[in-house]
Amino acid sequence: MEVRELAVTGAFEFTPRVFPDDRGLFVCPFEEQSFVKAVGHPLRLAQTNHSKSRRGVIRGMHFTDVPPSQAKYIHCPQGALLDVVLDIRVGSPTFGRWDAVRLDPVDFRAVYVPEGLAHGMMALEDDTVISYLCSTGYDPGIEHGIDALDPALGLPWPAEIEVAMSDKDRAWPSLEAAREAGILPTYEACQALYQRLRTT
Image (cartoon, rainbow, N blue to C red; front, side):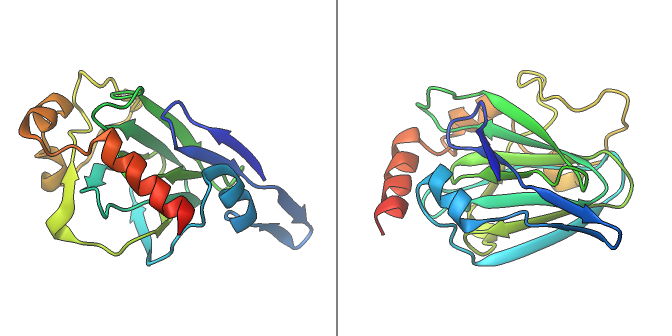
C-alpha cells in the first residue's frame, strides 16, 4: 500500500496493489496496518455508506461539528469520481486549501478525510459508485456544508461537465459566510480530538 499525505494536513491518499489474473482481479482498498502507520490511530467504524450518481453530480462539501465529527475513508468501485478535501479548520496552517484525487476501479485509490475537514465529490461518469467507511453514524443535527461552487474556493470541478446538485447542497453558504457565522470547527478543537484518538 502506497500512502501520500495530501496538501490538506491530515488527509491521505492510499493506493493499494492490484492483483489481476485471467479470472479478474483482487485488491484490498483498506489495510488497517497501513492506515494506522499513516494516521496514528485505527479507524473507528460506525457506518458504511454507498451511493450511485450520474455524470456531473456533485455531493458536498459536507462537514460536521467537532466534536464528535465524522472521519471518512472513501473509494470508488465503479465509474470514476473527483474527490475533493477542503481545510475549513479555523486557525489551521492550511485553512482554505484543498486537494483533489481521482478515484476509480483502475488504480483503486482511496482517500481518508479526518474529522474537521469538508468533503465532496463529482461523478465523472454515469453510474459512478462511491463507497465509504464512517467513524460515526449520520446525525443531521450536526451536519453542515460549504457551497461547492463558491468561486472564492476555485475547486477543480471539470468545466466541460454539466453540474447537478441537490437543493440542499446548493443552499450551503460560502466558506467566508460560514466562518462569519461561527459554524466552522477550530484547528485547536480538531487537534485535541486527534490527540484523544491517538491515545485511546
